[in-house]
Amino acid sequence: MSERYDLYYWPGIQGRGEFPRLVLEAAEAPYRDMARLDEAAGGGVPAMMRVLETGIGHHIPFAPPFLVVGDRLVAQSAEISAYLGERLGLAPDTEADRLFARTIALTTADLVTDAHDTHHPIATSLYYADQKPEALRRAQEFRGERMPKFLGWYEWLLEMNDHGVLVGDRLTYADLGLFQVMEGLRYAFPRRMGAIEGRYPRVIALHDAVAQHPAVARYLASPRRLPFNEDGIFRHYPELDGE
Ligand SMILES: N[C@@H](CCC(=O)N[C@@H](CS)C(=O)NCC(=O)O)C(=O)O
Image (cartoon, rainbow, N blue to C red; front, side, top):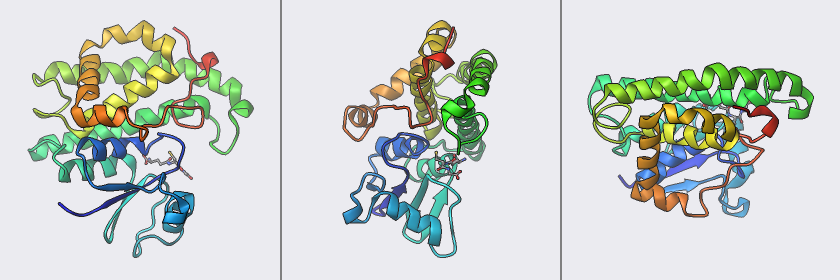
């Protein structure tokens, strides 16, 4: 497959762009990370805005991340990951498993939104400082109810499958997504994760296996992998964390 993949997203953060980016990196696919390409070379925010305003053909994405491959445009982090995974050998084989991999990726996207909403429970357009009381309540609920519910579900899927992956018998984009949320949750909620992650040994084993995947390990050690920060989805505000 010699087609080039152009991934568009905001520069400076991992954010939701990191989900398709990990698929491209794990598959060692030829891709341009448009967020990190110089504006002078046709990348950066202006390039992203151009596609958001004019689309590719009549296909206009609602929000980044989105992927452009020739005359095709795909948006939604889970949908891009599925598209790439299925083309690049990081998806299961059977239709039943492929559908379930999509189900997992979409559920992971829901978890990402829940994590985002801990620091922006009222409006993305407002500063965190302007919605802090609501954020404190939302984060408490997220830590107490949502984190164990999501992590327990992943653990259960791994318990049901003998292959050490969430679906099918080899690593897929669904597993890469779980790796990324584990990284994000550990960054944003280190105290909570320290208190509960021992309950999910299979999730941790899969996270560690992904980190050791040769192409992923090379990517993680490279400058292409940005550190988490307080502009992204997973933010470490100590007051939102707790055991
Ligand atoms: N469900 C979408 C959410 C996309 C999204 O919320 N993108 C953010 C950046 S992470 C954005 O720039 N949104 C602009 C907006 O919603 O107006 C996905 O998973 O890709």
